[in-house]
Amino acid sequence: MSDDRARSRRSSTSASGSRRKFIARRKVCSFCADKIRIADYKDIKRLQRYISDRGKILPRRRTGTCARHQRGLTVAIKRARHLALLPFAAAHTRN
Image 1 (cartoon, rainbow, N blue to C red):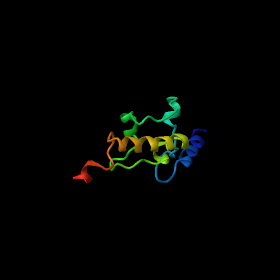
Image 2 (cartoon, rainbow, N blue to C red):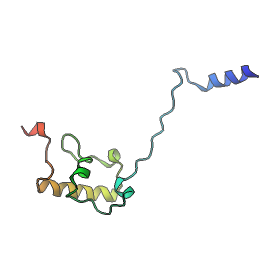
Image 3 (cartoon, helix red, strand yellow):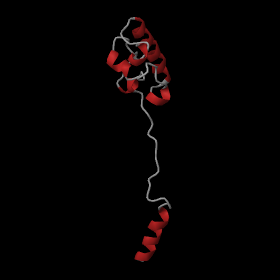
Image 4 (cartoon, rainbow, N blue to C red):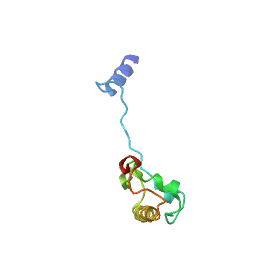
């Protein structure tokens, strides 16, 4: 009986080793989780999480924000840039 169990365990692992299958977790909108209705352009710490190191706005598929909050987030980032709270470009490209 123990030989049957050992064979079934070996057959369940693949030839490349005992790798686990990657299961992607669903990203949750941080604005919905924190119950924030509108992204505030004055909240610089929060807005900086949604900007790449080159100064670009990160897409929904990377950040996990919902469509409603992504639209508001984009407007808030653009307002903060206009008021010089956030940079338009990265520091190394401005020099």
